[in-house]
Image 1 (cartoon, rainbow, N blue to C red):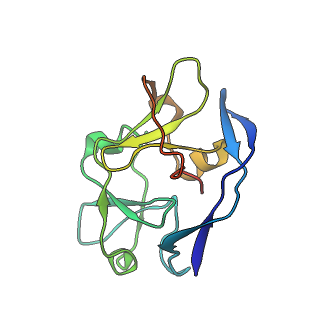
Image 2 (cartoon, rainbow, N blue to C red):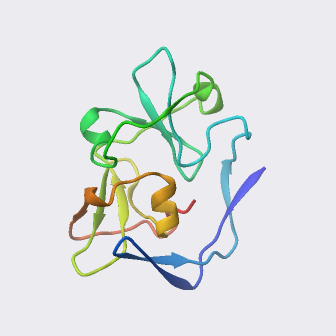
Length: 155
């Protein structure tokens, strides 16, 4: 099943004192395939019972490996994950989430996730921020923010 991405007019959403610009989608096909329902879905943090590695399923149904404790705690406040020994068969080629952090520009309410692999990706609304369990206290101000318009953190 092919996923579709959408981009269009903006709607503002306020959550925990921050405002998100929600982009209402227009259709553009994505090349990624959605994982079967038995696999972890976007927003889930998982690990196997045989490895200390923790993974995150991102909006593009890619498995993102969290390389170290510092990266983990730049996004979340506490350890939280589920054990799933089939995660690597669902997503066989994890991409590291290097140097990830949550950022926003001073005076701009939009929040982004940044990592060394993808760059800045706009977290489109508070519901998405909450689905991933990100921590509001981890959002840092940073300039400049140069988002990838075609790669929002959207689901």
